[in-house]
Amino acid sequence: MNTTEREMADHTLLAFNPGSSSIKLGLFAIEASGTRAIGGGEIDLRQSPLTLRVDQGEKHIDIRLNAKVTEDLHDVIEQTLDWVVRHFSAADLAAVGHRVVHGGDRFDGATAITDETLADIESLVPLAPLHQPQSLRLIRAVRHLRPDMPQVASFDTAFHRSQTDLVRRFALPRALFDEGVKRYGFHGLSYKFIASQLPRIAPEVAAERIVVAHLGSGASLCGMQAGVSRDTSMGFSTLDGVPMATRPGALDAGVLIHLVKTRGMTIEAVEDMLYHRAGLLGVSGISADTRDLLASHEPAAREALDLFAFRIAREVAATANTLGGLDGLVFTAGIGEHQPEIRAAICARLAWLGVAIDADANARNATRIEAAHAKVAVLVVATDEEQVIADETLAVLRTEGRGL
Image (tube, rainbow, N blue to C red; front, side):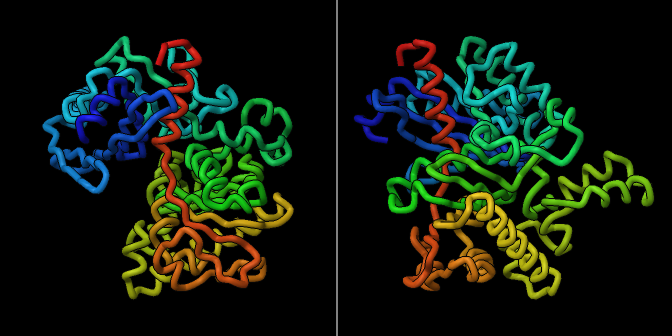
């Protein structure tokens, strides 16, 4: 970062984006026009020794952390904050924003974290047991280290609050819907970012009927029109929808009854299987990583990939039904952005909908990959959840009149 950039970064904010076993982070300068990314990084909490990988433009730095991974993460976050402030000259860290997976019906947008909102976030842990606790650990660690630091929560579920009750409802007794047993949807920060980019990248289809496929270790689809969520594949929990790295996607509830009543599995054992031993890992018996499966010659690896593409294509078609048609298909996240073989397999199953891709453009991971004769625009767009967190955090701070 040059001297001018340092001068412009007098006020900064940090965005935390936790996964089940990793923490992504982004540092942003606060400017009159909004937020500007300065750098980003990631900590894999499973790695030993613990390393903070920092990305600053084309430059990558690996910083070894001496901290131990504890339940409260105090040492990890303390060392991370110290390094970020020192390296980026971010002495005036104005706020910290957090991705929180589940906001239930309580939160329809980003909110400042208070004792009350923190308690509400914690009450939703049973609905997202893999991810919600990680956000809580980070929020509490920052509170412990910087008690006066403003913190803001950005919710993955908030983007989908525009969906109708018809879309959100399960065919269960009505009282359960009123008690919160309904479809919430996730990956909302990613979808919000894609919706913000489409008017610039593809203005001719931005307001039309679009399905966005967020394909990473967690995967879901969202049908949107004019940038507004109308349907999504994930429902009550992050287990629903299409198969994922270690999660099964949509599953007949009778299977769970069978496993508990007939096979004698405990609820805890079933939960562990559904979150950690199903999906691509379960079907292949080899790996949860699509890169490993693409490189494998084992028939089970090919079957796992075929199932992945088949279920995603079927979900695209179902979502197009909600929208009343399909004008655009967008691939994003790790698999969606970087694995042309999987994009091609999905699109081949959607030819009847007018989807066709250009093989060369697809192989290059180009932004526009539809064939000249295609009836549906097909795009590859990189997502940036940390940018959304930063923008929402600044918006909350300015609404509160903090003078930034």
